[in-house]
Image 1 (cartoon, helix red, strand yellow):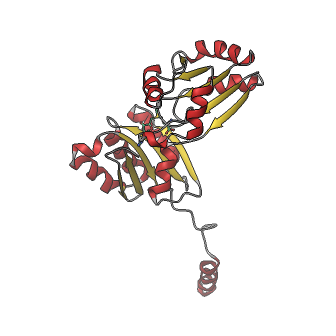
Image 2 (image 1 turned 45 degrees about the vertical axis):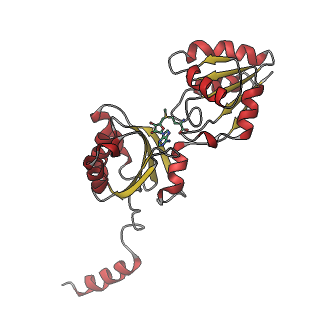
Length: 249
Ligand code: SAM
């Protein structure tokens, strides 16, 4: 059988495409793209002509069998999305599962991921983190999800678009607390890249004060909840408590 390559593309700056990604995109039998027009523009920018098939959220179940057939017959396929790494808040999951079940080799060509790029410059703890992708669009479901994350001690990473960024931050302020540290990473690797850190309260005000602050693509990161201090009572507190108890009548 052939090989399915999962190929990362830039999240803004075209210079971030990997040489190996270009090599593989130029060599495969077919490129499975989330948006063939967008990928067509990327390919032609690098002087690559490739046969494309569309593979997006809505046609993925329909498109997978044909691609698996091609791979079984020994063909090579490169999966790409509009930006960054496929499957990371992007299509491709069904294709990868089907290929692995069929015993077809699936090989990564790694590159940009907005979440990881943002984490790497956020100054928030990066040893343990949770990627939550997009929060639910409906306010009640969004708050419920945030509530479920409120006690998590790990750094939380979210994706957000311009039209919901203000609502999203406001809900975070309410559920995670106004003082919780957070970072908004906007338009990473692009001309208007902007990184803003502060409390959720400060960040809400910052978004409100200027329309430009709400434009573009966003990664929002929040610090985790403070770790509980051991078993509740420290040995020293226990010792003092013992002394006090002894004095009680
Ligand atoms: N597959 C992509 C990745 O690897 O990061 C993510 C695709 S998802 C449909 C698009 C979301 O990713 C945007 O709404 C935004 O939250 C985030 N994103 C993508 N590019 C970004 C950038 N240059 N700066 C900030 N956030 C970005």
